[in-house]
Length: 527
Image (cartoon, rainbow, N blue to C red; front, side, top):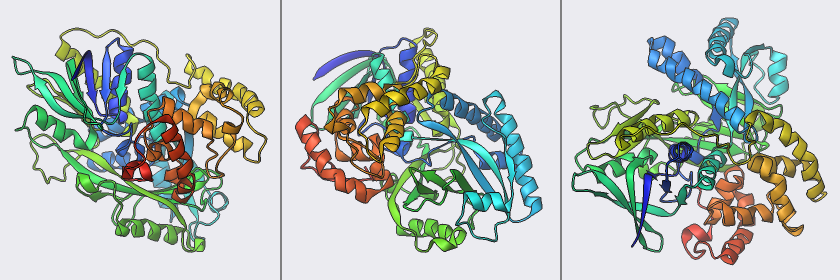
């Protein structure tokens, strides 16, 4: 058994775990991140792709006079601005429309969204505005004709799996050790009863011992399993709610204006958003077991389709390109019953008597403050002050993030010269920049001309980036490559299946994974 020593072991390679690893290396810690599956393969690649404060949380804050909800909205809005600035190639401003059936309702939304704008302060990304019937139907041409007015407001849209990956890869370049397909089987204690090491096992059954001064549990909805390794008697804190999303082949938002339905029959908020030239519809909210969190039910799919037909009746029967689900890690208040419905979207950092630090709850947009709060607990565990964070731009961004947009514009000319002259060249250039940022041109230049040819008109991936995913981005299976590195399977599963043989061949050539296993042999959006 190999034995390695670190300042910090992070268990879990989703948004919270990769954020902790990234922020920890910025503070000079020697870090190892252990992920049992693929980076971001759970909830973190299955969000609604919004960087947002949460309009419904703002409404709830005022209806219940809950200042905690208001603070959560304010924090999330500031973080929305942070990511739009730090990673402008994979996070962009998105305008959404809230339809209203009367002028009073329109005024109500306008006032509320004006406060939403104000809460973002200097991190604001645009003011909300009234929408006339003409403006609504020009932007959403298939919207049912009786919708006569609305309000538009701005939030952020991003590639969740890609941001998750870049946080991990940036930490890795700065010295962190990243291991995927490496499950933690045991937590080891020292003579004082404190957690001092993690024992992991990879897919080949090989074990390693990871000694550390501190161990962080960032496993999302699976946090209780790791907590019970440290303390079998600790109370269960996590509940799971399944969110299902559909991707329609029709583009219902051709002008780039998304639609938010503020109140469905069961009180839910529902989104219909532009997504790779298609339409992303979501989400449901169904209490479920962890085992069924990534398995969309027929009832949930029907629920979403019914709302599409209700709001876009001229569409006919929607053509679904892909369907997937993810579990929300909902955190129960300490001391609440296991079946309590009193759950919150705030996060909490817990330190057990054994020293295990767990970061629980929260949401994608606030992964950075979650990580910073976690490192405060690490600091207390280590008994020494951490260094101030050093500058560490995300891979693909400039050292000065404010210069990134201008440099991306300059890179366009280079990419146009390098890419094959096909009808997809503009689309391919935009895709490569959105995936690799300022590193796109150098990568493309390193690929052969044949490896630059686009393979699909849905997302113009090329063989060069598929090889890169396997050689440099920890992709081990076809699902890793086609669902999380380039998102094709999440947009159009049939198209991803068409490219599956090519990806399997590249995996075999690289000697990665085992194509004979169910995971390696095909696509599995539940894995």
